[in-house]
Amino acid sequence: MTASGDRILDRALAEVGGKALWTKELDRALFDGEIDFAVHSMKDVETIRPDALEIVAMLPRADVRDRLIGADSIAALAPRARVGTSSPRRTAQLLHLQPDLEITLFRGNVATRLGKLEAGEADATLLAAAGLDRLGMGDVGAAIAQDEMLPAPAQGAIGIETLGANDRIRALLSAINNVSTFRCVMAERAFLAALNADCHSPVGAQARMEGNALIIRGEILMPDGSMVEAGESDDPAALALALLDRASPELRAIFG
Image 1 (cartoon, rainbow, N blue to C red):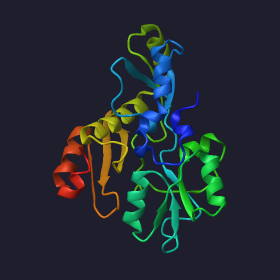
Image 2: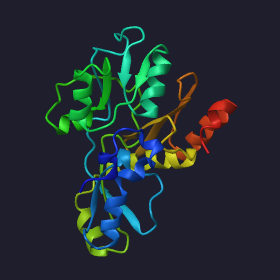
Image 3: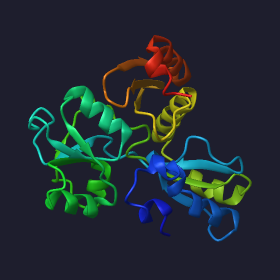
Image 4: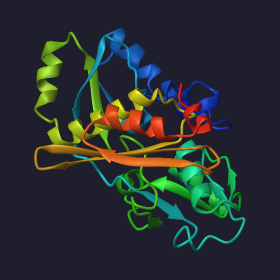
């Protein structure tokens, strides 16, 4: 199925409906009984989902990092280099690291974005390592360490959603659920929910398991990268509230 997010490529998602552009066609098919379950890139799934739907399984998580194409590292980008992205998070993180960068809108699939880069529309771009790996392009670009750019919440995760009342499908899907990935991604989504973040909000988050304990790192940024608050906790909601409490009024105002 082709989602609206694949068809509307000339504007940022935040301007034309946000992450629902990736899910509404699949949601309709679930409600109409055309499909038994939907497979999502979890990074592109809205934090608040319809009550009748349930995310019931996730596959083992892929590489969560971003890759930079066009330069060997962010530090190697030339002064005032043009970087193509439509992500508020990547924009804010890049400008925090190198404020003189020029950000230009890049939308579309991997081939489209690489084509724009090849055509000279930007000097560099960032793509999710997981997407490149799935396309057999694991040698494209330079991986950016999580300490330098914290990934998007749920990046690298594939999730499976069905009707909550469909016990038969829920039971079948439980057989392929990766419990560690599921716990981490749901914690990252809980962090987003506690922030009341939307597709305009520059947010990074990464949860990990340490034995049976879950630890989550998170950060919130001003869109221009001028302010950032970051921290770590075993409680996603508590971390979100702590970051908002420390944030300046300007930064706090970004989160509704």
